[in-house]
Amino acid sequence: MTRDAGPQSSRGTAVATYILRRLGLALVTLWLLSVIVFFAGQVLPGDPGRATLGPLAARSAVRALDHQLGVDRPLLVQYWSWITGFVRGDMGISYQNRSPVAPFIGAALVNSVKLAALAFVIVVPLGITCGVVAALRMGRITDRVISVSGLSAATVPEFVSGIVLLVIFAVELKWLPVQASAGPGASAASQLDHLILPAIPLVLVLFGYIARMARAGTIEALDSDYARTATLKGLKRSVVIRRHILRNSLLPTITVIATQTGYLVGGLVVVEYLFRYSGIGSLIWTAANDKDFPMLEAGVLTVGVVYMIATLIADVLYTVLNPRLRLGSSG
Amino acid sequence: MIGSGDLSPPGAEVAVAAPPARGQLAPWRLLLRRPTLIAGAAILLFWVACALLGSAIAPHDPLAQQLLATNAGPSGAHWLGTDQLGRDVLSRVIAGARSILLIAVAATVLGTLLGTALGLVMGYFGGVIDMLASRLVEAVLALPVVIVAFLFIVALGPSTATLVVVIGIVFAPLIARTVRSAVLVESQLDYLSAARLLGEKPAHIMAVEILPNVVPAVLVEFTVRLGYAIFTVATLSFLGFGVQPPTPDWGADIAANYGVLAAGYWWETLFPALAIASLIVAVNLVTDSVEQVLAS
Image (cartoon, rainbow over all chains, first blue to last red; front, side, top):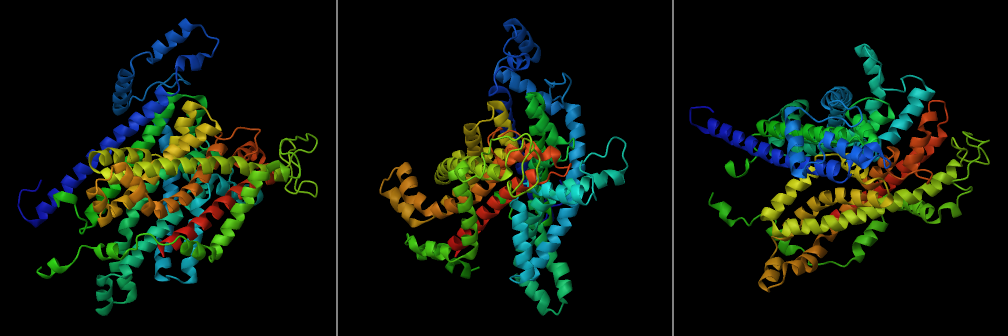
């Protein structure tokens, strides 16, 4: 808190209040999410001891395993120990490997972040550039091509575009490897080489959204009074675009990029499965196939947490960067 | 600041000028004039015909295996080649339209019904109900649809009914959010205050007064969601949590034959993939036209 009173510090307080309120809402949402995940993972599937040991196992063995796994306790107790453990970084014991879940999640998350980061590094500049170009050429052929191809690419499932890419670049032309993992101890360049092909289906889906937001933001900024004033003041068009238009048109794009994180993980499940890459997506897939519920719940909840953090950062960035944003009732 | 008192609240004029309910004919005529709609509808009708007629129009039995003619490339006898078990790819692509369309349409209808009901309640009552429901909606939206669906399908076991119910329930919050904002616009209008003053019950107001006015928003949301439902069903089938073999299904067939792609047998995966892409693009063309016509 700043001590000196004045308009500057009151804005600072308003921003702090907004961020705290936003954080509170995010925590409530996360709690609801954890209840949903717990319900789907622990209540719906029934008896894990029976599921692990099979229908022929003795009832006493099933009961002993249930007791060992702790699933014979009341649901509220189970939920409490599960969620408090999760907060402390103890995500439970995998049914499949009989070892703690957390290290698996950590390793997978690192791999996924590499792939997602590469996709973002390609798609963010590309999407923004194409969106701005489309806006500057609004209604003309360039605009139509960018908008229509963005929309089409966004709606084709990743495994469909992934297969087409695999057929062309890996099978026919043999330019890029079929698998995403470069093997242990591979150099950064080799890792990158293996990750380009898997990143493209993610880029294709994200491109349309980002380009559309950048286009809409730019058109709005071009229409504004300050853009007109800047032009009438005699500034060159390139200067107007760089100094006045881009700054304003990129704000909403930040939010879109963050909300796409949630989608991105869904895409990662498919892409990682298709390219045999061991990230959080394929971890969730494997856990689902093995009915390894502790691993599955931890994976899904981790995805939710990552998404919440990303949207929270985006909201805060948006608020800090945009002085005109109304800060609800506290403003 | 004195002048600002004279300004009417934004939207007030629009509200007064809006006609209560225009005839249904005009938008439909406009729709039929759009070439994108014609193209989308033609592709869509083709796949619907395949789904309805299935093996009746397929050149071979989609389940018949010919173990002496496996992985055969496209030829006169098998236009799109055969798969690993020697089954005719063209016949499986034609018959595969049924499962994906059936599940996607049923799930979208279910999701639209649930979402519209939830959105009406959230928008009409507001307050605590709206706050709680909004948090729940956001919690579901925090996860990719595929992952939420995954979680429940694993818990319940894959079946057509599970897929429809799970995808329907996951889509409901998304639709509810759109309907809620449409209802909020309506609730500012005079006809609702009039209905309340007449002593109409909330259920009656929601169903008879508000619902007809949010139908365009629901319609657009339905077509948008249908595209995503196809995307989701195909993805879940590809991941092995949707339609189970040997039933012909595009996503499942891609997953089954994907292993021999690197060996050069591309037709077994490429043609079902193109079928999925064409179906989704067709739905998008229709959605785009509906959106544009309703917006104009």
